[in-house]
Image (cartoon, rainbow, N blue to C red; front, side, top):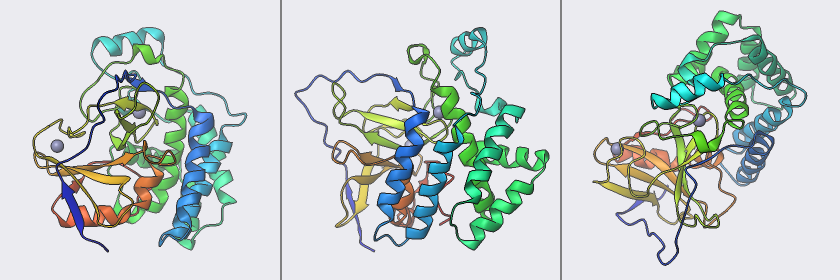
Length: 305
Ligand SMILES: [Zn+2]
Ligand SMILES: [Zn+2]
């Protein structure tokens, strides 16, 4: 493993007027298929190849589970307006409750996941989740939402987290992006979940701007650069990477809250994907943790480390 290169520098291109949208909503018909492709590509010559291929197949199952499955129900227009008035996200993940419609897509996902080639631990976990009663399902979902997954149950919670991502991406996709407002630092304006990572994009008219990627619903929200995505401090923010690495994935570390969130330079490599590239760059986590920072990004697919 290489040493960490540290810099205070996050070069921002000048000479171009960027007008980034505040939020880009996920397209559930593409997001999981594209993530599956990225996981599969990252698996080649990777130490974690078999795990990354398992996640590729799980994302493909998320994609397929949508076929013919009823769309989840959005909150009423009144409730959405009220949430905005209080500066709250329209889809309050903390008020999520298991419903019959959620069970349908969860069961569908589990059935598709049964056909995936997987390590023995993942197969045993799937059997436990498939046999879980509604109280156990609820407990798993609470753990995912609170980002407090017991370390010895990571494998079980991967399936519950995948079902939640699917449910929330389908809901968020149908919101009106023009009606979304900032709801606080480190919180998705659609569902309130924390970011998994952030991305500097190369989009037309938004070239070089940065977006936080929601760990739950997949929405992207605009966030200034060189500012901690967890505590919003602009002092003591620096960038660390693995020496000799591709320089497209760095850790943005914050000395105010001592946390870090990865930043992906998608403008240099359009294939980068907020969840897949986070899992595949586990080496960077180990390095930054050694330097005394704790992980700020949330990713239920990340192996315990
Ligand atoms: Zn979200
Ligand atoms: Zn901070």
